[in-house]
Length: 514
Ligand SMILES: Nc1ncnc2c1ncn2[C@@H]1O[C@H](COP(=O)(O)OP(=O)(O)OP(=O)(O)O)[C@@H](O)[C@H]1O
Image 1 (cartoon, rainbow, N blue to C red):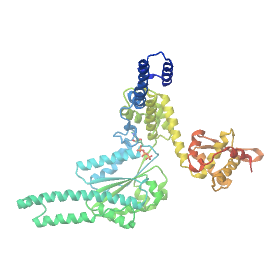
Image 2 (cartoon, rainbow, N blue to C red; image 1 turned 135 degrees about the vertical axis):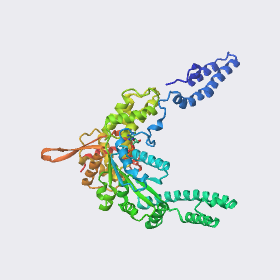
Image 3 (cartoon, helix red, strand yellow; image 1 turned 30 degrees about the vertical axis):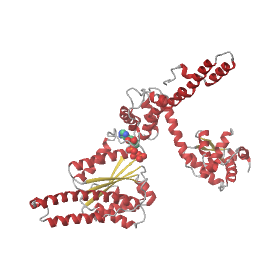
Image 4 (cartoon, rainbow, N blue to C red; image 1 turned 135 degrees about the horizontal axis):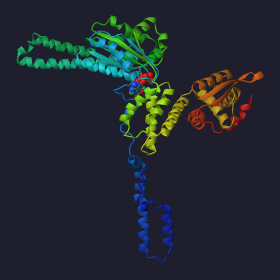
């Protein structure tokens, strides 16, 4: 850490100042000018430089430390890398299917599967960008539209978003065309031979063409985000896509969320479009974490959508190392990472089902922790701290979004643990739970339902509930917390209903009540 207080004068303790002035002030035989000098000097130091030092220290200390990062953005999820190590096979498969579009034919629909963080979106976006660039190079009209179905999750919204994208593109194309024709018109007015090489044999024909384009433009009405009947939205989209010849690839990321929220109507409509389109062709690229979502699809949609399937397997620790190394080379300064950092991030993330997003988060967080410590290197310990921090953030998020009833059950378990109760059983939890509900005026669920909520908390990894046999007393669950008590309690108390409880001791005493 850089110490900005090099000047010993600047660190005068204000208490010392007042002592000094009081002492001097009490000495009557001291000439007054000296006294004034001393007091004013000290006061100046206190109100001027010292406060400057204080405000400078806040940011300057942080800024003066040699930054560890060269380009932190590269580690953020929003960054799309141009190289995707260990995804060559999947990228080539996608390209082999989509190259059909560059020949003007309809590519097969593609379904991409794989667990979270396996590079599905990054690879699909990479291929799409390449496809669009190549289509421009060869002047073959081919466009890719990306929709995140977690955000756009109803048929209406998907169709409206697509319709508006194509309407805007059509309007741009029309404007460009009108500008070209008006230019020709101006030249032809000077000299009609300008029309010889054009599709128009007279100025009147040219004018009609411009009027037609203006009329087309008028017809494209933006679809509002709510309010129209769905079939009107569909036909707007249909007309907009079919306005001119092109191959369109519609990328539906998190497609399972769309099906879960609003069934398979959208996919049914999109997959049957090609039989009716006259000028254009549509192909669908669906991306999903959930391998089972096609079980819920209409068999026709299922077979049409899954014409080609590409699986993204989880990364192993070695592959994650390569991915991290490639990013770290750009993200960090020269020797900022000690040797153990990347292997450890890769090992932790490999345990988390081979998730590259998690690996990158770990590396970035470890770097930020080292930066906060103001040291020049990221060390193994920063990665361990980062792992704990990310895990805690996850717990906080899960607990914060629990339904109130689950929060009350969890609070009961926390109160028991905090009072030194081990091997907590369901009956004890239920007794405290009942009293807490009464206190905050919440409905009291049955003990059976509370047992279910405890199992859900177990599945979320918040508590650990094991069934133990008590011999002739039957079987019971022994419950313990799997998350840090203090932090979890703080999150629960930030809920306005639970936060109202002032004194929790009486509830703990109630644990043996019936
Ligand atoms: N092979 C790779 N090389 C470089 N970076 C990668 C690679 N695979 C994934 N990533 C990075 O990991 C992060 C997650 O990747 P991506 O969003 O593509 O995963 P996903 O499989 O689509 O996950 P989800 O299903 O959760 O959306 C991104 O920041 C991406 O850049």
